[in-house]
Image (tube, rainbow, N blue to C red):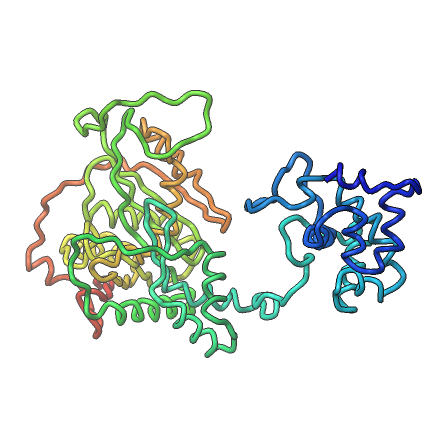
Length: 456
């Protein structure tokens, strides 16, 4: 290409640039005659005038594709500017003759060329419009739509306690309809984009053996939401409880990676018999204040251990945080030490919590198979797992320190302590002891929802 252009110099001694200016008025054919290039090549070169120059050392734009003309000859862009600009600037008709573009398009193109030369208002790389161009986002036109969507997702969100994965029950169409009912116009695409900003994404189902769903599952979710709203309105405490996965204490591999100069050596096999002992973290999460309390047990996961931890939280934190409160709402799973069928759980609540503190304790259990909707799972346990990822849990003190240093951008505060007491397993509660309970089952699924008052 450089040879073709140098070969066009005649006896008159005029350069190609000087000969192109007067002859460029005739169109692409005249420019092709002067430069020795094809018309299509010149057209592509003129289009390159609107594109920002490549970064130093970059051969091709991000995304691949065929090479642009200016990549093969980096000096061509500057040559074309010197050829075209004198023939176009100041006369809006000449761009029509040379580029065959509309008058308005010529004005915009000339403005972009001037801005690219001066450096003012130049586009950023990989952008189609300048910053601020195009239609405004829905959340900019309606700033309250994000808050409204977050409010809807409060009782819709579930999560994995071992990861940060979260999911919701409602579909995009359903959420879009609920937003429209509240006066927020948002298509399913807008809802999907907002959910992605909140950390959600589409996941495919995984085949696995599982039990059939509970027939009154959605109704129980609605009942729990109504109970939570009543306690929040009255200023009464709400706690979400559960036992985290039991952890072996010793030089065992903990999944994950951390930044360090040298990897820490751990045992080749994670045999339970090689463990020094076992840690049982029982968690209490206050969704109103975004605070977590974890009591690390050293013996067994029993109903007595669960209730003792709740009573310890109430005496140490709850009574001070909620002065004058006479009732407490507990959100729990349907199984485990705090399950809805565990007699020892209800008896311990009566004797250790209600009778000693005078509280009226209302308990709502999530249906079987729905423990992931318990707030503590995805608002406390998942962040604890992330915080100690890749670090061997070599002692109780290490576990307590890692739990207590768990924080989030949302302001989560976690306190941890060791429970050195020993709790016996296999305790049988008789029918006579159950008859002394001051328990009132709810009209809706009394096996899941009940209130226990202090015996007078």
